[in-house]
Length: 208
Image (cartoon, rainbow, N blue to C red; front, side):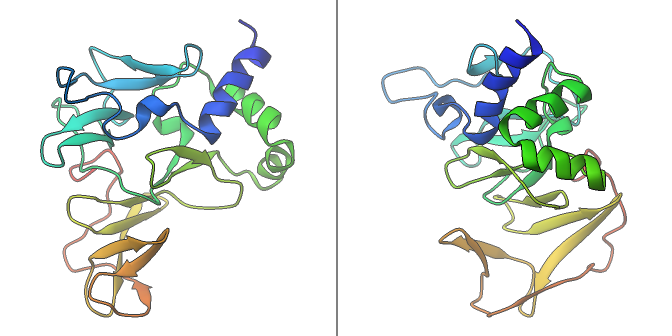
C-alpha cells in the first residue's frame, strides 16, 4: 500500500476514529467482556489487539474502575495511566502508529493541506483531541499536550517537560458541560497553577 493511499485511510481515522473505539462498542451484554489491549490500525480500519504494549504509548483498554473501555498511556509495569477524558489533547507521536514522522506529515498534508503548511512554517507537531464519543480529531491550531483525568477529574497541561495542574478558585476538580470545562464547584473561571509538591515530570512518568 502506498503512503498516499495509506495516508487517506489514516487521515480519515484521525478525523473520525472507527466506531469500535466508542465506549461499550467492544463489549455487549450478549458477548464476553473484551479485556484485550488495542491500538488503532488505520489500514484495517479497526482496533487491533497487542500482546506487548509500548510504555508511553496510548492504547484503548478496559477499565475496571470505570466499567468501560478508555484511552490511556501504557506503563512499563503493564498497568495504565488514569483514563483520558474529553478534551484531552495529545501528540500523534504518542500513539502506536506504524508510520514514521515523515509519513505522518505526508498524511496530514493530504487531509489538511493548509494546516500542514502552517505546521511547517511554525515548526509545530501534529496533535489530536478526544471528544465526548471517545473519538480523536485532528487539532488544526497551535496547542500543547493536555489531559483530563476521568478518575480524579483533574486537568493537566505540559509546557515542555513541565507538567502543570490546571486549577480554579475552588480547587482542581473539573467537569465537562456541553463540551466545555467547568469548575466542579460552580466557579465561573479558572486559572493555571502548580500545586505544592507537583514536580516537573514526563507524560510517561510516575503519574502518566
